[in-house]
Figure 1 (tube, one colour):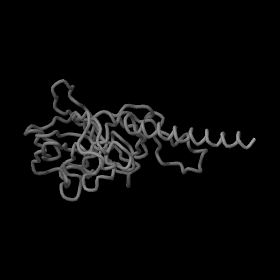
Figure 2: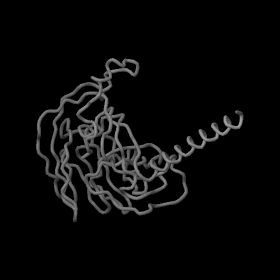
Figure 3: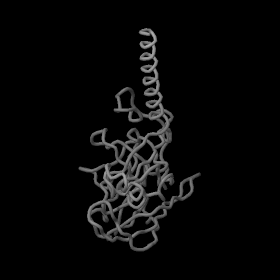
Figure 4: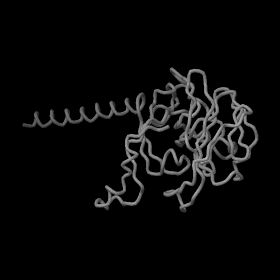
Amino acid sequence: MVKKQTGGWLESTKTVVYAGLIAIGIRTIAFEPFNIPSGSMIPTLLVGDYLFVSKYSYGYSRHSMPFSPNLFQGRIFGSLPARGDVAVFKLPRDNSTDYIKRIVGLPGDRVQVRGGVLHLNGQPVRRELIGPYTVEGDGPRIVVREYREFLPPQPGVEPHVHNILEMSDDQIYDNTIEFRVPEGHVFAMGDNRDNSLDSREQRNGVGFVPVENLVGRAEFIFFSVDGSARIWEFWAWPTAIRWSRLFSAVR
């Protein structure tokens, strides 16, 4: 009986260890879950969204692994994002905080915002007014303007279309200098343009994002809650879940 019991404990321990290793492996090379705690990517991503990020999209760096161990520099099987990708990256200031933004500028691009309109390489990016949008779940409820933005095409990549929000066209980051994206870096912006700390803030914000800091590309939302139910209010869970967002692709 004692031998059987010991064997049972050993087998259970092995199972837990194997499961942990498999989970770490999947998290490192395939997919990693993230949740959205702030409204900088509204309307694309809402506070309370849970999504999967593909780790293989841009190759692998030390930031692909848990705790970002300093084992090597650069990327293995690396590739650049496409303009318009929603990507998770490590904040360059500390190399540990996860940020999620939209990549709008690639190495060598000239990026500027004039009167709220994004300009790439000296040309304004087309945007079309959709109408009013009510922002909820990220501080006071406010009504802003929603636009459809059309990023310019890239060779072999279809032009990217997504929605953005603007309170007005004269907020703090609606008129910037022209930034030239250095080699080995990308330029990231939030879709909630007047409520996003991103690459437009070079000193105390995000600045240019090193390609090495890219963690992966946001692929799809697997769960979403609006925050109206506390964890112990199980009777309210069904109404707190945003059912229409479940398993929707991130664009």
